Length: 525
Image (cartoon, rainbow, N blue to C red):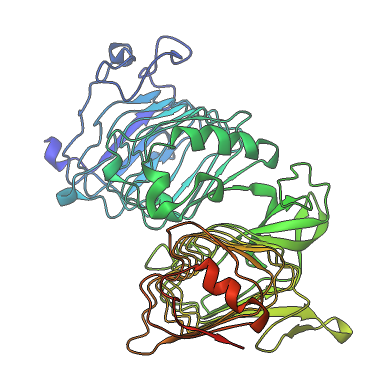
């Protein structure tokens, strides 16, 4: 009986092939109105579904001394919908050339019949379409397509709930809805198509995609801007790429500029930090730091990649967004592991969300190249030699940093850049026309705050709501009152003790009344 079936073999040159030579372009394998005429294939849907003892499937076989062995010659042309659904003992699937379509839920299973033994599948070059949830709830950890692959359509949730860590596609034209949904292992998807594939947005945005919040997409650098524009706009209303506030630009990287051995991925940029897709530049942005299993991450001053056997070297001037999001962690963001970040003094810009929500990050250590070419660390306090000019929104949000010192070229600190962290001391003595954006330092524990003459503007609530218990804040201004947003108190919600101001500007501070929290607290310094 079918319930006792243990193997299914299709002969090479099988008659079970389509009568037409190519699958129709307009066919939608995920549609309820299936565009493929399965009557041409002489085999029905679900024909082997529920065969719980089935262990082996060959889509093409031959005989070798009377023994059945898999054949490389074309055999079965299509695997129909649900064909091997809930075959929970399935372990070996040998797919030969000639197969062009795998239908919806063809090898899928429900949670009670999960295919725990099906871990690897190689797809033939002729395969064009993988249907909706084709391998859902299997234990697949490895899939492979050849560089000559004609694979075009990756169906919705095709690898849902699998253990696949990486996948590479060469001719993709359609990337379905959340094909790796529920897969916490997936960390990289490589796409080498000659054009940017269409991408589908899940109809249920609250369904999310836990995999995509930690997955990087690697594409040819010549297409990088197009991917970010096309995919980003399609996800602008929410859905997968909005989880954890991730931006699509931070998830799509240049395949050629990955250096896993060195622990980073790069992006060539010009002096202003903008993408230089031709690579004709001396500067780079670090866009991904691969977790190394240690409690510290280090960014080199000079980073390199090897492209077509030629090694290129770049000076690191930029830190990208979400550089520490990594699938190796139990959480998509390394909140419980990294305590130290080492950055070179060549860094000019730290992007939005760069070290977002790294709850144990307590030390930001600046480095420089010292005598003999060795990397050296600056001591604590103000570092005059830094190139740092801007810190993006949420860059160090909810970290464990306790102190912050500005540097002479710093001109901008973004919204909530250090919000909800553990800062108790902030020194902004050295800076140049510095704007401190909304809520940049709100929700910390700041008891000592120094604001230098180079601070030009304090935006709304930038130092509001410090959690100091009963300890009052001591604030010292080194210059004239900075510009503040009217009626949006930058120091609101704080217990303020002494506010020290230069004697020359004492009456100016009293007159400008920049904060009700500071009113009546001024003393001449």
